[in-house]
Image (cartoon, rainbow, N blue to C red; front, side):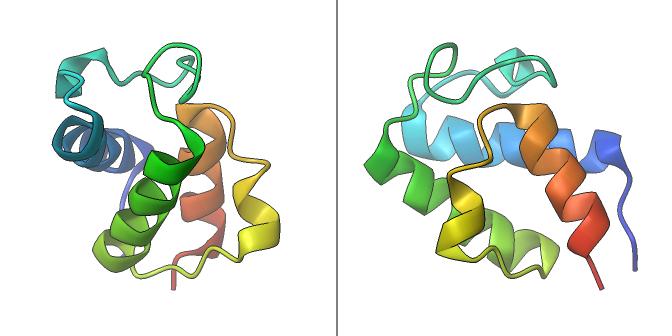
Length: 82
């Protein structure tokens, strides 16, 4: 079942909260994972793996480097969900 952008952002918020300890409500579309949410490259791998499991998408390593903001990740998941 397809999820909405709002559901994806909420899910990413929960994931970032678990991994980086950032409050889920601070995870917004315009936030940068590295600059605003303190997600380093190692933590980003954990975020990606958790997002893949949660949303049923595969995010190849080559695409991860393009996911700079929460909006980038949400748009990617929206486009690639089955």
